[in-house]
Length: 393
Image 1: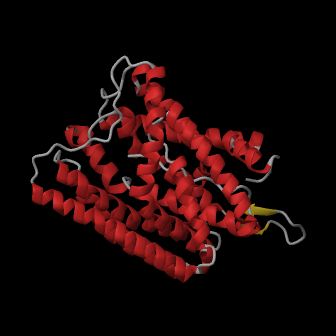
Image 2: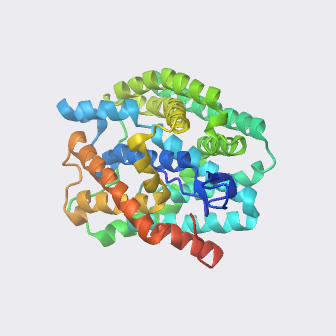
Image 3: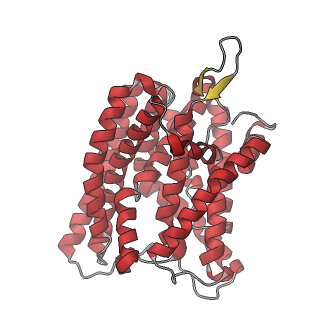
């Protein structure tokens, strides 16, 4: 399972600003909902990716480890990567509309370079590079309105999920004997950092192309949903979309939570067919629950009852820096060149460590923003795209 990175827009556009702080002045505050959603999703993504970092197999967990794995599958697995992908589409489409194709292309080429370095030097689960490549398809959606974007997202999503279900049914017909593919990196105990980097450098291009071919339609569908939300102003003006948010909060969870339970059951089984079928169940149920979470947090935002969730806004504003920092810390703990803990921890301990790390990033992000105004990697990306520092991002 890999962690997508939803990256904040280059700068706060006028439409992302909330109402003026004072009727006498032009000072405006950021709309909180996109940042809170991004920060919450960043935490959820890390909880799910603890499995990949730590190297345990879901279907081998027992006792407390199995309980934690089930909770992760029901409430997090596939849910938060869907939020991240939609937010990425939201930000990318806004950048394209505001600043045109030139800046859009430069930014995503820079993201491709950042993602490449992340994959090769730190972690095989990088998603920044894949998002950057698939995002180029958004250039062909510039003239689509909300309805057109929703139709395109629906068509791509149904097609991709349908192919996954058909592949899973075919696997069932062939029998249940084949062992499940874990998806874990091939790390040998005692393997040096140089050897791991060399292997990842050799594998990168093939994995990127394969990922774009396999996941591209689904990711583009999520990007289009985010682009439609931007055009409609759902995240920036949630008070205008109360009926939609209520519907999402109810129906998203009514559909998504049972599918999460089905996913949890599938992840207790070690056969190949269950592994194949779990993919469309994970992503279809994940999208439904993700929309439910967006609806709930959107309603809380309108009612000004975010409470502790407000702390996630700071983490969301420096999502790219936090995402890469998570990879550095988790691989330092688990990978064989830094302590040989890979495959030795169960779900409870690994997810617990991920939770501590993600929560620790909340006050650290707030402190960093007060001192510097933007995250270090966010600053670097803007500098590379524009040739100068942009403030307010």
